[in-house]
Length: 163
Image (cartoon, rainbow, N blue to C red):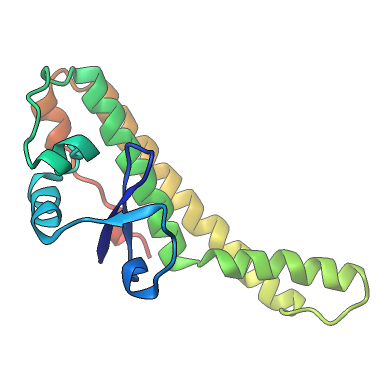
């Protein structure tokens, strides 16, 4: 993984390819080895070092996060995990190909998938999406009921068991 400062931005981006070696995307500046180590050592589920912190190799002491901020952050992470699990089980290209196939069939053109394949994929996508949504809303209810950060951090998700 390669890490970059996005020039004129407060974001650090992660890419699987080296833009530096390709000589493209001059709007990105690759982190030095020391900056990358600092970034990875200080990045957690709830804390992401800022560009200034990474450039200075020093974490700023910030006020403690409130329970509501922590809950919102955890919910955002869980929402991403839910969508990621759905994508792992039914890749979005399959949904796109189903839509394109339906359009092709409607226009009397050759579809990517047959009607049977479309029905199977869409049925499975609905099933998996439903399971992921149900798990997210189960977790959301637990998080909303939590009265402190420790309770929230002890909540465990079951996304990996969805198959």
